[in-house]
Image 1 (cartoon, rainbow, N blue to C red):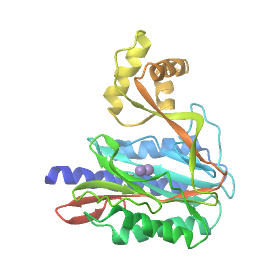
Image 2 (cartoon, helix red, strand yellow):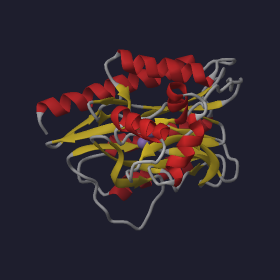
Image 3 (tube, protein in one colour):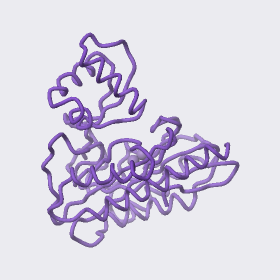
Image 4 (spheres, rainbow, N blue to C red):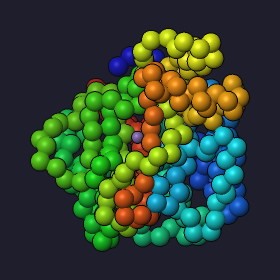
Length: 296
Ligand code: MN
Ligand code: MN
């Protein structure tokens, strides 16, 4: 990897880590999710980056893909389990990192188990390791606390302007003998739950991504799509960002762009048994045999 490229991966990691820590520090009873998201977004921009994706602020049974909606009024309550999942993009070189906090309280066993599962995985991760070895240590640690790993979520490869690419790193043992990439970036992200360990799509969608296709018929549709391509490339963006720029009526146009295939929707993911969910995540860079956790 060229030095210039490596510097961008590392800077994206540093900004992502700072954004994650800021988000966790703001998670107090009575604070609105919208204010936390905006503060994180401003911090990333002021540091010279762009969000890799909208800050995911998922609470309790919601595992992932929730970012505050337009005019969101949700506030945090004592005892809420908040996942702060954020990342920065530097010229398309990305970070993706998460932590979980008990709002107004101390770390509980669910959060501890998930944090330790990521620490275990980081200890053994190496270029070219069998992916299943990572899955095994994650599952073992989580089950040692009589909790369940979420089996249909996991780590992934990252590439320039592609947040999910190539390798999938399950959070539970599989029969796969696949080998992890030996160059480039990956994210490892254990999820643990008090439920059975499976997430399902909910009908709510707050995050979308450009998906290609032909130009829409309406002027507003074309303007929105041009803006998305220019501002976010192929990275996920928040419905709220478009509605703040083009007005609340643009929500209907966004739906049209989904129906025409121009945009891809990320459904909010919930644990199927309504189990409470925790998540931790780091981005890891492999370069000529060297392993760097960029978000540590
Ligand atoms: Mn993430
Ligand atoms: Mn991820």
